Length: 480
Image (cartoon, rainbow, N blue to C red; front, side, top):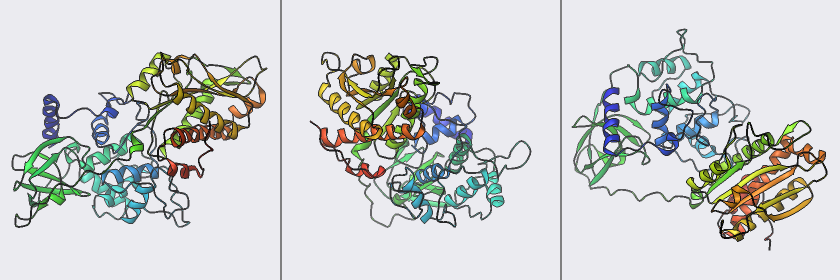
């Protein structure tokens, strides 16, 4: 069965019907020989998993919040951010909707003290139980769930013969087990798959897909009355086999036991939150071997990356689409930073730096490029710089060095509103104390986030008011 599915994928690629997903294609740490490549790319196509800045981080531990989100996306649960029954999962948490939905379906639960502990790593045994509950295998213990996954060809044991139930599970392994649970064509040898239910297509045209959501490519279109056999269900989707022997996914709402009922029209597409189409690129300056400025034992490349990563988390708790030019200690050439922003279709570009001047200067300043012949977005860039500068001054209480025209490559050569903010002077002790502190870095990150919201709210007139709630803030006064 695995050979047949892979052969189908090869044919679809050759016909141009199944494109490699953009996000998966950009996973520089998932090469052609990676053991979990097929499973990770399958999930990525369906937007069940994602990475950051072109990396998937396969060896990172999976947290309880991440597990709930990935399983929730697999089942097409409601993932809209919401308040939850747990004191440690607020409505701003990226997985709050999936957590609450999964709890209602009794896939996952919290602790007796009223917490969910979203950042606690998931063990292999817990993963087995989660998959068993999500896909209705009915196992009730870690031991029975682990056995069930191995019998179905979803999981394999450790090299020492155990399942390793108490070990934390990595993103690559979680992806392998989840993808195999969804798509039997990816499984290793296990129980023979049966197709016990016979159904008929009850709509004029029904898309037969390679995965259980509309994010997956269409294999072919089936007409009214076409018979199919169903093996199992993934949420509202069925893994089916056609009379031609093809295997894939159909939505169960458009399958009937017989053809006596009315033809059901296809549903209207779900509207997309317009804010999710806004792309914001955060640019942490420098990177090894380019240290940038230094002072009192710390390096600019490190403090600006730490701040950018904290800012990324604030944006990720909203529908806004945030991307990083770098998320590791690696230098990116200036031209490549600009190219990345353009290729990403960025709407805003924010570069983060720290200053130095022989220990004699201090304060914060934010730059924009003020010559329209190169970057035509002067007014927008100046407005964005102004709102970020005001928020940064409020957060840090540093001296105001102003909003200025600056002839820097990353803001000069970009074609979208672009700013470069200098948080403070790394060689001035009071500024340095803030730059080195995780607490003050977080305040700077929050200031960048809020300044961006202020720009959208006041200048672009976009409906971002609800996004302020993620950090318990309100819009600033309109600046002139």
